[in-house]
Amino acid sequence: MRYGSILWAAAAFASAAVPVRGEDKPRRPNILLIVPDQLRAQALGCMGNGDVKTPNIDRLAGQGVLFRQTFANTPVCCPARAVMLTGKYAHKNGMVCNDLRLRESETTLAELLKAAGYQTGLIGKWHLDGGKRDPGFVPPGPRRQGFDFWAACECRHDHFNPVYFRNDAKPIRPGKFEAEALTDVAEEFIRANRTRPFFLMLSMGPPHDPYGAPERYRKLYDAQKLKMPPNWKEGVRQAGRKEIAAYYAAITAIDDQVGRLMRLLDDLALEKDTIVAFTSDHGDMLGSQGARLKRKPWEESIRVPGIFRCPGRVKPAHRTDALLSHIDLAPTLLSLCGAEIPKGMQGGDLSKVVTGEKDEGPDSAFFQIFVPFAGDGTPNPWRGVRTQHHMYARTEGKPWVLYDLKNDPHELKNLASDPASAPLQRELEARLTKWMRDTGDSWKWNSMLPVEDKGRLFRFETFYTIDEYVQWAARHPDLAPKD
Image (cartoon, rainbow, N blue to C red; front, side, top):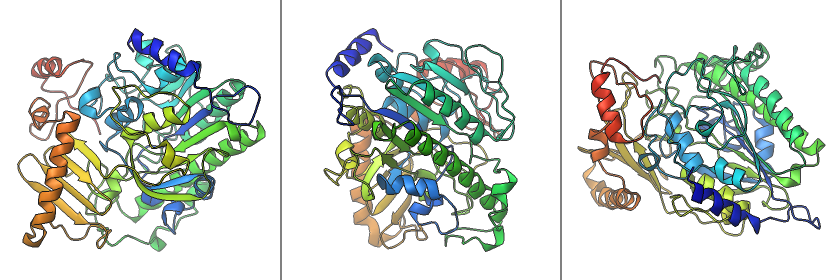
């Protein structure tokens, strides 16, 4: 983080304390940001899913505001997390695909809050350090991007055998399901910091594949009785009924941990002092459109949960169709804390939508995928734009998908080649072109990034510019990134 940014943040917060409980001395609100991995919005009861059991998350939404149209601008793990924390699009913060290191010169939400006197904590999956994923120790210092408390690892999708690190390279193995183990640590952090403002990011690995949960959750779901959406196709590898049942079981396990944390805030009388935000880094196709995983322009991939709760400040039981994207998360949270938003952030401040003062957000959301992943069915790098009622995406060479979401919510009819839809496509193409121009994006970025080579991709290591990457890739053509 730049030294000037630290001074700016401290000055901005010095006069920005927010009265939350009507106390004589105002207290800045805590922030608890809960981010499960690969949880699509369609897999929550409050979003209309009648199969999945999420009573605590539904209650959280009922106590605050539910953004029914929340999106991942770059729906894949590392870029999504970087966008959330920096408020910048992937081509601006440099995190254009998995297994890069977020530049230490970037200013994150954690650094801004730390400069303002917040105790900052990261628990769980980090996935912003590049290099080797497992065991995944990230040493104290600037590579932790402003997080002081640390109980995390780079990336490890072994939910029944989780590992995390504190301030040395000795792994901690809690010996229980990851969502439960990480919530234990979150309770520790909240209790230790109950008398001062804190920002805690709880980054859970489940329900990311390999799908699964403890048996007490698995037995809640009969795979054969689940209701499949109209766009679901049977026979997709690792995306059948059995996997979906296990995915739902993991979500219910997460839901129990959300309930634990809400009870803890109540017990510590912190419920009115704490903004609770619940989202995910991206969704999961799970057989919809005959596809799996993420990186796709379809709703199951780009749409994520969007919930904010803060009693006394956030209007309860509010539902909104205002478009909210990852890019908006950092500026919105800063504003809710009474802070100015750095000029470099590209997202919008939707705090007044959160508090119910208005119900209008951006007119569209912008999407970017720079690097295809071998074997997952994603075509060439693509860009997209999502409005209230339409989704349009294209590769550099040609339009790819166009859907009328109002009349075709499951995206069953692709209108990209429909002559009758040509005027609509031109309108959305113009809007997409404007997004790219306004954000500084360009198709040229794709030619400077790794390309598929005999079913494999180059793997990224630490670098700080595209040119450095190109030089490294030329020296290491045999290395490939993981999903």
